[in-house]
Length: 125
Image (cartoon, rainbow, N blue to C red; front, side, top):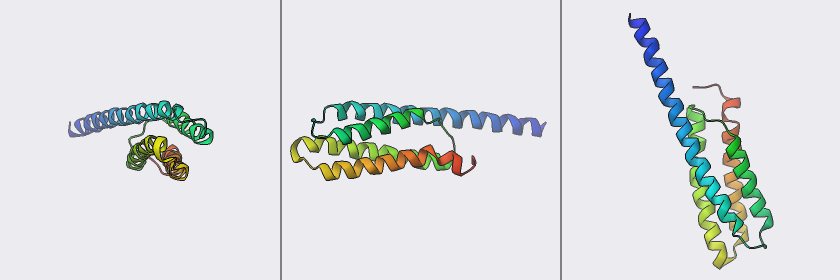
């Protein structure tokens, strides 16, 4: 009897983890889509940055949710990086600081690529 309850509890826990993972990815995708729309408002002086943000958006939208701890850590990094890029996009209109924008986009891209590979480099925890 205890064995059956143990299996049921593991399954329920896994379902809860999967739901949390799906919610986390949905939130990131929504935030990234908003950033992508903001990047469209960048002037024609930043075509490469616009392209890189769009590429990040495409990659993030292709990543499957994962309940691994490793994936969760990268998702936190992505959330912070999206906020930073968004803030710099707003500042670009006044400061024209292309280097800072490029630097923050590279950090975002790196975090997304690390998250993309999180489950292929380490087994589910």
